[in-house]
Every structure is written in C-alpha cells, then in structure tokens.
Image 1 (cartoon, helix red, strand yellow):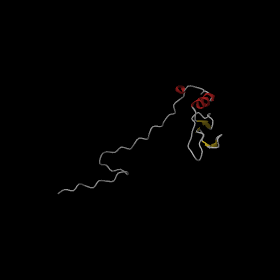
Image 2 (cartoon, rainbow, N blue to C red):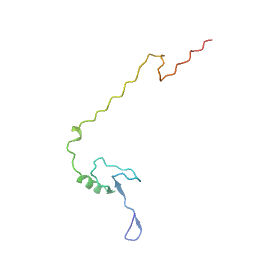
Image 3 (cartoon, rainbow, N blue to C red):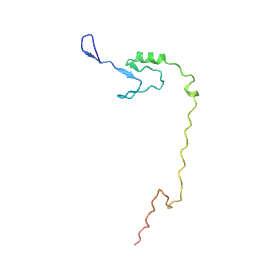
Image 4 (cartoon, one colour):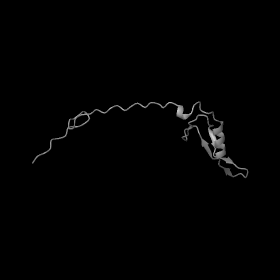
Length: 92
C-alpha cells in the first residue's frame, strides 16, 4: 500500500518469487528478483535478465527413481502376519 498523488490509498500488485512466513512463493530458476510488478512487460524483462541454463533440458540426465519393494506373496487362504485368520464357515 502506498499513497497516490491525490492522497488516496494506492495498491501495487506484484509477483513474489521468494518464500516468506506470510505467503508461499517460489522460483525454479533461482535468478528472478524477489518482487516483480504484475505487468507482463516487467515479467518478460525479469526473465530476459536471467542466465541461460548450461545445457538444454532434454540433455540433462533423469534422476533414477528406485523401484518399489516387492510385496510378499502367499497362497490364498494362508494367514500371514498382516492377515487375520478367517473363522470356519458355519454349517447347518
């Protein structure tokens, strides 16, 4: 909030790129300024100033994701430590 030339309150709309205790924000590039005016031309200016990445995204190695651990398999009807035994079926 600021005061305009006519003395009325003036709001400034901005994009924030760094986190704060009062709001969530982020910047994947790490080079954008903390505050950018909410104006497309200012946003383009801020992006044009950033350094180009050293290699194209497609050339970057993909992080290996570990395979999930295999689940134990048992024969049907055989109780395991995770299953409770089923009661015998009642007959008439």
